[in-house]
Length: 311
Image (cartoon, rainbow, N blue to C red; front, side):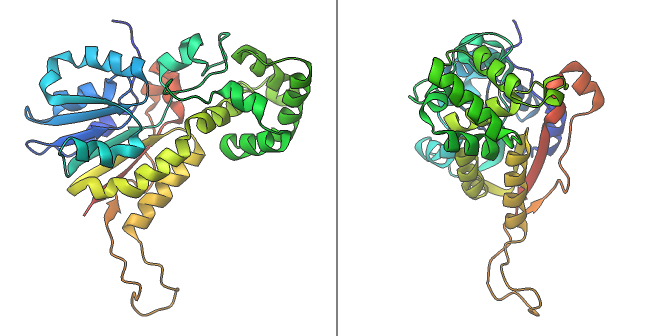
């Protein structure tokens, strides 16, 4: 079987997941089932896993990969932001572990028809859930120059957003930008010469920004972080693997607030706000892939794992 997606930080994930008898886990980004397979292999025989993903192709691959665990797995097409609703509909109150791997799968990047990558010519799509209407093409052609610039700066942390937005607008006045390779070429021509010859493709941040906007990824992450801890049993753990600073900062801040929710002014002899600690952060600094993993899977190099335990 060809590799749909190679999961990252697998051993680190397994080392943090609790393994009580009858455990219930949520893999909110089940992808091709790589993490899910190892979780089921290493957990008790009566453990169950709820796998959620927006991508129907990913769920199809997961179903094949987990066929030997069929009685212990439920796969749901949806957004991990809606974990609480999913679990309620399944009659599940609390779980022992939640995993979110926020990266784009290898399949999505390499399948030109999905429009996530720029190594091959493909449509400007980028939808994780192809039932959604808005595509990257719609954003590239529908936003004003100011809004496009703000999107690239906010979601891509693109320092040359102004010049890129201007170049996109200039091309739009001539003809439509139909493909990923067309957009990548426009961005490459708009950035500084230093960027054009760097190790990282100059369009990386632009594609990141559009993908985040198309899929409303930060909104989903914010909702999941806000409600995820309430779904955990005591001793249950929330694990998040992020790949860029926007996500990582959100995870870090959310976990910090669960550990230290007090909002009292500094200097008070004791807490007066009454906010109760809900968790403890187990990773004061994010865990990163080891050198051998990065050599084997270069896409793992930017992965960062943070873990919080419910108390």
